[in-house]
Each structure stands twice: as C-alpha cells, then as structure tokens.
Amino acid sequence: MKIIYTKHAEEKLIRKDIKSFKINKKLIEKIIKSSRFSSKTKYGETAVIGNLDSKYVLRIIYDIIDSSIKVITFHITHKGRY
Image 1 (tube, one colour):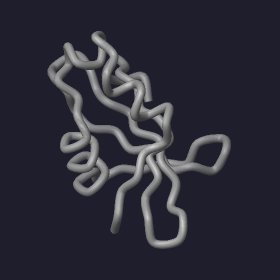
Image 2: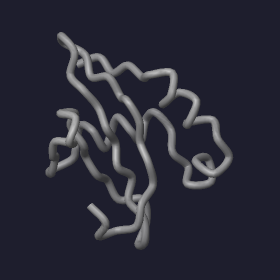
Image 3: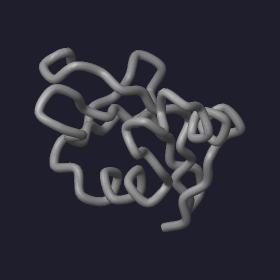
Image 4: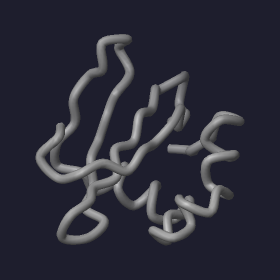
C-alpha cells in the first residue's frame, strides 16, 4: 500500500523537537505496518502506537483512502496515555 502524508504531517517532520526523537518517514511507515494494536479516533480515523523509548510512544493518525494510507498527523506522548 502506498503511504502519503498531509502537508501538516510533512511540516511536523522538519520541526526541531520532532527531530530530537529521530522521527522520520521510515519509522512512521514501520510503525504503521508492524503495529499490533489499532483503534479508531472520535472522527473515524485509525490510530496506531509504536514505542520510541522507555518513556515515550509515537501515536500516528491515518486514514485509508482508495488503496493508499494517508498519514494525517502524529504526536509524541507518554506511555500509558492511550
């Protein structure tokens, strides 16, 4: 499946605070493909979570459009929050 990114997600990838966690497209795609748990957001998109380190996880929000995965946004959060 092809993975595309919204302008918002692309802009987040170049922020300094995001780069400090070494987040890139390769990591996002790995988490989407290997995540064992997914849930729906209140707006109907899919959310998956992947470990970053012992304290933080990366939560990725995406939608499936036709035969593509569209990454809407992602954020870093403490483990146990979601």
